[in-house]
Length: 282
Image (cartoon, rainbow, N blue to C red; front, top):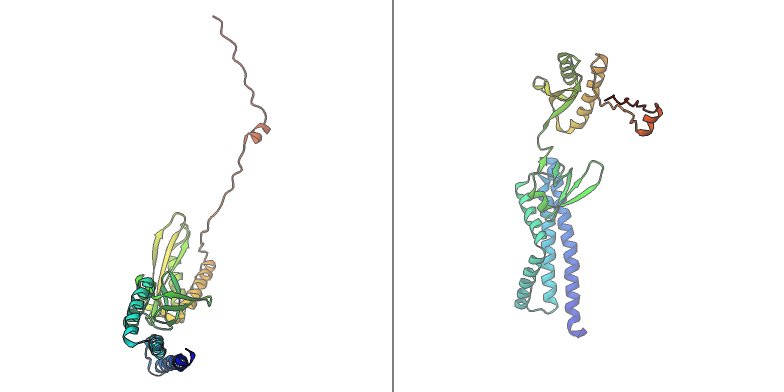
C-alpha cells in the first residue's frame, strides 16, 4: 500500500507546498503592484487587493484537485465528488457564499477604496483591506474590525472621504437674554477667520431652533476632508472664547434640590392642637 501510494502522496504534498508558495507570491505581487500604481498614477488599489485574495483561493482549489488526482482518484469520480461536496458545502455555508457574492459586487462597483473612512454595518473606520469574504477597517482608537461583506453590502454605507471637501455642521446654544445678532456675527467671524475654512462666501450661520432653555445657532462651513476633525475642534474653541469675551452666555442645566419633609420632620415643628367646639344648646 505504501509502495503503491507513496509516490502519489509525495507528489500531492509537493503540489500543495508549491501551490502555497505560488499563491502567496502572486497575492503579494498583486498587492505590491496595486500600491505602486496607486502612488504613481492614482489607480484604485482596492481592486488589486481583492483580486490578490481571489487568485490565492483559486490556486488553492486547483492545487487540491491536482493533489487528489495524484493520490489515485479518477477524474470523473473526482468531478462527481466535488460536485456533491460543493452542493453540500453551499447549503451549509450559505452565509459565507453570500459574503463572497457581496465581495464581488463591492469589487465591481467600488463604493469605497482602501484608505477611505467609512461607516458600514454600524461601525466607523478606515478601510485597510478587502477580501472575497471580509472587509477590514481600522477604527479611530486603532482597533481592527473585520466585517463580512454581506453585511457591508446589505446596509447603507457612508463614505466620509470620497469627496475632497466636507461640510462642517456645528451647533451652539445661547441664552434667551443674549443678543442673537451679536452671537451670529461672532460665530461667522470665528469661522471665516480660520485659515483652513474653504469658500468663505459659502459659510452660513443662522438660528436653528428655539429650545426649551436656549436659542440654538447653527454653523455650516466647508473644509478639506482630511482636516475636518482639526477644524471642528479649532472653531469650537474659538467660538467659546469669543462668547466669553463678549458676554454671550452658554446655558447649562441647573439642578435645584428641595428637601423632602416627612412625618418626622413635620412633628418637630410642634404638635397640631385641635380645640373641640362646645356643643350647642338645644
